[in-house]
Length: 99
Image 1 (tube, one colour):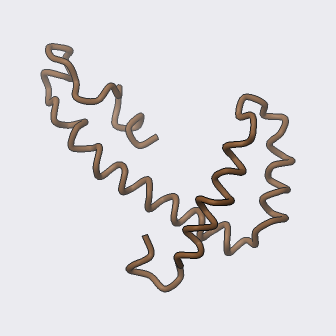
Image 2 (cartoon, one colour):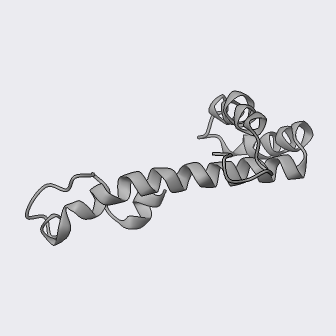
């Protein structure tokens, strides 16, 4: 993830997976009333530039995942889109795949 940039470091990757992501995983995502408190915890824990680096890393991971899955999405071709054969991935649209 950090090979082609000097702005993202292995320490950023470690902090992302060891601290940032677990903070969200431990939150009840069905309770939106907790969102303002979570935002304050994030802003109190990390600086704006650090949060920006996390966002860049997450974007890179999303792009890598998309690059791996997109071939399976289009591999079904028109027949899968029309329901004439099973789609390789159970995803309705390209947008759903991106999400």
